[in-house]
Image (cartoon, rainbow, N blue to C red; front, side, top):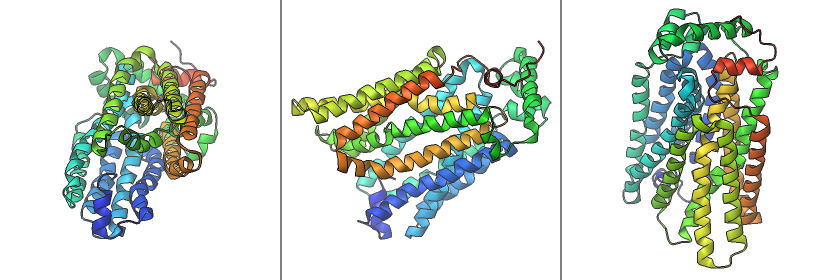
Length: 427
């Protein structure tokens, strides 16, 4: 909404009211928070395929209501519904990929979330270009935004269900068919044995409640998930993205679309590297390297702004630091955070741990957006970016000492190793 918000505000009668403009953009986060909380229970009951299809209802309705809006209330409702759908999707996609992907390729396939996000951002930037000359183009954009919902609803009709969920609800034959088709016939018996071992130990078929998040080992993984998203958001990604347009203006690049394109390409390049490295180097190593790179980038920008020896050099270092920060974020902090949480979670509580973790993500996302400009106004850019760098360093230390490597291990192996009470099956 950053591009068309000016046209929307002008046509719907709240132009110049920064509070209402901010509300139209940020009510999306309120919907996403509620969607994240609801997603855990939905995926436990309906499975991934049906939850994906059900989730397309608010995605499609929200886009259409927004496109046809003739009042502030209507655009707010539309944005809220879209947020609700996105909140469910952000939880569901990593769970689905982690449960369906073969162990060997789970990291690389999980990183496709980040690739998809980058491509979506770049596509939306190109779609937004006509809005600079056509004040009514925003309606067309929002009509187009309903198309992915229709594609998702239709596409999931032909996609497989998670074999782990099928086994959990007693559909063993269906689970075996899925495993045979996507993992190979040689994996069927071993996988089913591991699934059933986990189910027998945890009572997964009985279901799970939110209060079980307070019990070990679920509470530990929920804390790790929440902490990773707190560190990710307070490392400043949204603040840097917001401020990048001003950074580029300092060197004469005044087009917001061109600025966003540079940022999008840096993000995309980092995500491509992550796809290649995720199953070679492992999650922990990528996360540590990513946060160290982000810290160096923030300190570089802070020094360039705080101690300007030469104005042109200072501006160029700021550009370099910004692009380096986004690139290194996309290599680890972006994709690994959403990938490693479902890998560490137990089969019984995976949906609810992910729901809790992403609800923390949306709260922190909102707080950074709310506080960033005020902090910059009070302290200046250099001290705020130094703070982001310090958080990034803390995140690297946290990843070093509090995470375990999940590369090359099945979800069941990881769960058995993290649960000291797990009764190991006979081999």
